[in-house]
Image (cartoon, rainbow, N blue to C red; front, top):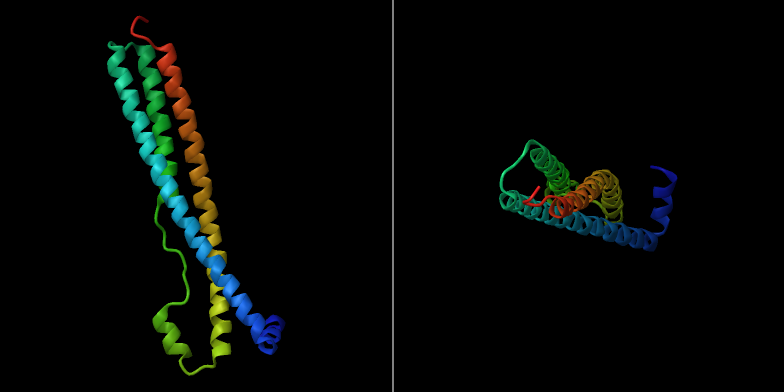
Length: 167
């Protein structure tokens, strides 16, 4: 055992406080995961709405010249970029959430409360650190998808303003 664990043996009230704080932070992490997932789903839905608007514009413009087709292909490419990064942010991965009930019961049923709490605390901390890495990747993907969606919307506005049926 290391020094920190030995110190906690002498201070059960500190162990209880740390245990509760780490448990709360782990719960906050899972709330953050839910938020990222719902925002990614919103981005995917909104991007699809933008694409359907783009297709409506295409029908309203009428005949498509080679120049105009390039505009629409570029918009579809932007849409795919938004969708890919939003999906990567949305993708449901297996996050670590300790403890697993059965192994906890099997391994620690005959151990002291203090010993079991220290082990669970150690697992909470490991879970938190592993999940933090995956969450930061999902946040990056979500940000990229939102920025790409912003560019797509601006591009759609450009098409609405500068492409008209007479050109």
